[in-house]
Amino acid sequence: MNFEGKSIIVTGAASGFGAATAKLFAANGAKVVASDINLIGAENTADIIGKAGGTAIAIQTDVRQSSDMENMVKLAVSEFGGLNIMVNNAGLGHKSALMHEMSEEDYDLVFNTNTKSVFWSVKYAVPEFIKAGNGVMVNVASIGAKRPRPLGVAYNASKGAVATMTRALASELARYKIRVNAVCPLASETGFFKTTGLDTLPDALREKMIKEVPLRRLTDPIDVANSIAFLASDQASFLTGILLDVDGGKGI
Ligand SMILES: NC(=O)c1ccc[n+]([C@@H]2O[C@H](COP(=O)([O-])OP(=O)(O)OC[C@H]3O[C@@H](n4cnc5c(N)ncnc54)[C@H](O)[C@@H]3O)[C@@H](O)[C@H]2O)c1
View 1 (tube, rainbow, N blue to C red):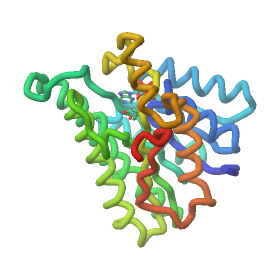
View 2: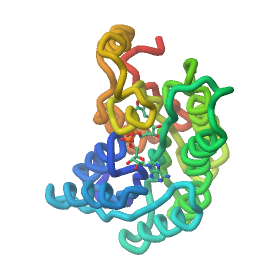
View 3: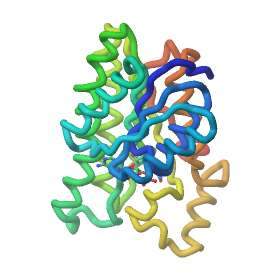
């Protein structure tokens, strides 16, 4: 896959899937805006890319905030001459909890981070795609959007909204030659495990989780990065509205 000369934004690029995605696109020629609420982490990703000979700039962005999202898109345009690819990856889960015992604060945090971010991204990135005459958006949903489980209802529902927005936007934006797809990853031991408390799972439960995956492992961030890159590539030019499971066969 060749992204030579393409301008791309990756949100949540400080860690996990976002960091792997930013590095992969840069290694294949893209000019990357590494955006995250965690500026030091985003700068670290941009530094690694720069030291490997790639092009990246970091920006602090809270994906829940309109002005931050607008500034992030403006930076891509001013530094790289436009925007070709938008990866909406920043997101978080909540501690395992029955929904009726969950706080409103946690519910709002999860929904604003995981879904309002896509709204702002559409508001600011899509006009740039329209100017360019094409564009690609890839959203990071979750296998939980399709196979929800107990104790993560709000998270799964927020990713369900991301999945539905992806398909609806694919249909709405095709008239502008804009493609919109999503990946639906299975669990991965990134920073996400800390936000959900999965990092403290007893070994026996972790082993059980792995045994339930036909390919017998959890998701590696590079699995997600490779899938995002494929969906964003010219090789996927006829694919839109796809919700691609990255799950080792768990959803079969
Ligand atoms: N790891 C998993 O098990 C898993 C599975 C399926 C989907 N996902 C999704 O993948 C995406 C990436 O998660 P990850 O696993 O790499 O976790 P991660 O915690 O390693 O990375 C998430 C990044 O998002 C950033 N972030 C959080 N809130 C933000 C905000 N308001 N504005 C900007 N940045 C913000 C964090 O600082 C962090 O760098 C998320 O949307 C997550 O829901 C994760």
